[in-house]
Length: 260
Image (cartoon, rainbow, N blue to C red; front, top):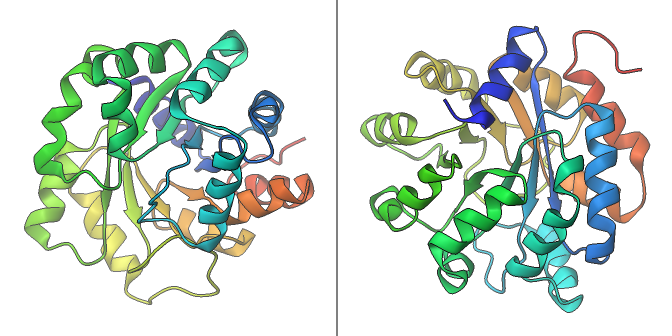
């Protein structure tokens, strides 16, 4: 069992729900990465999704796309981000999950990336532009280093496709809550409850909801139908505005016992 999956299962076994904030590495400068990660750890998050800026982010909504543009303007690259993470890896106590597109990994070198990512505290990787059928390009080196390859499951996937994705996904299943790109939303489709029930019945891998989740009520409502949530755009906006109170409020909802 991967460290990422084990960490999430320990969280849910305690009655809490997993809370995974998304941050864009390099937004505001790479020198902020250490303090941001350590502060999120202090708030009690389960894991941290670390976004890697990319020039053609097909899955990103406006908020995360703009954050990526700022990070790229600040000179952030996959290699520099990993080097920065490695510089304080001994202080990282939660699994990091890299959200990156395939080209940066190929340019880095898959085997070298897997080795360096492990040393940097990365325990999971999400690659939204890589179909399951092409995962053999990166999976063996990642598996050798104990890094989980997380699969995204969309609402539009057929039952047969969902079965294949849930069986292949490691660490957790990234259950996309909307048909579209990332970004805060006010409401979600009524049939999501049945969709998540079906996902959870087909696997023992934790199911986390992501895309559009932005309020304490969203965190609470999705926590009632799955194992936890990933919050992206709202976290990115809050970090840009130095609004830690909003982030803390979101994390608190995922806890059975109040966060002190």
